[in-house]
Length: 356
Image 1 (cartoon, rainbow, N blue to C red):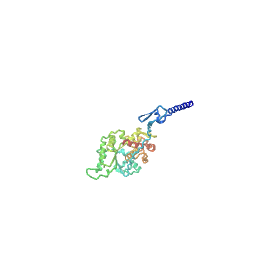
Image 2 (tube, helix red, strand yellow; image 1 turned 120 degrees about the vertical axis):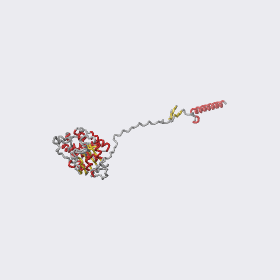
Image 3 (cartoon, rainbow, N blue to C red; image 1 turned 90 degrees about the horizontal axis):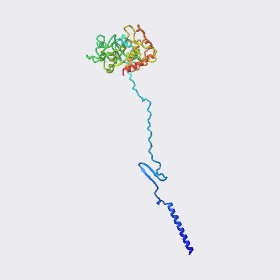
Image 4 (cartoon, helix red, strand yellow; image 1 turned 45 degrees about the horizontal axis):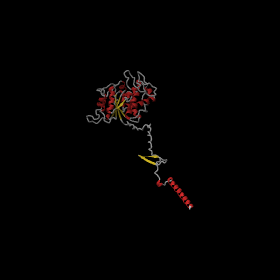
């Protein structure tokens, strides 16, 4: 009996130990259904995900970031000038055209036209020769006379025209226009004095010709040297108001002998006698052969648009017949390619300067 009691006590003790062991295992290893919520809290602010963790786990992954803007890039300014295409210069052909010179000895002295052809057509002076060297065959009318004005009672070109050729364009007699007035270009030149009526006189002559005729006004060395303000002013007004070509022959010669402009690399000394004759004590103002050539070339290039550079001058006389009282070096200028090309460049520049 005592043995049975001891066995029962032992069995109860074993059961008690087993029960305690099971209770302890449940506390150490809780199952998923009874586990407490993980001690991680997640807070969302705007579009950013912030994680505040009390454990070691990070459930948010890489934080979302806004990429910084790229720095602005300024392209360097182009150092290349934009291409500009200039309109090709219009070149006017004078082939088979008619050109008339109206004036006095400032035109024919120096042989721009020939003095023996006064009042005639078919002149073959330097203007004709220049045109020919460019391939143009021009019919030149020489209406230049000694001591003539554009208009005057006894020795005016206007009055002489009316007397010799009364049937001008739109004449009151309704007669057919005299072919004398059928000109493509007319060059006008005033008497060597300060004539207050120069503008009016030029306009009177211009009215005798048909509308298609174009005009030029020749400014002489005398106009510039003596500052003939009426003639110079008329030349500008004719250009600005009536589309008359300004011919600055006097300006280029005067500026060269005054050394206002120079020829690069020249070995010559320019003076008044380089351009003006010294035939008699009373004649120190007429152009010589070099100036006659400059006159002819400037007129041709101003009308046609051709460059003067490279033009032929082989036909220009180097005779010193008009240098009795003094000497000249114009023949040396004509013999120098450097000087002649320099003068030709100036002709282009002066045409552009005085006809903007």
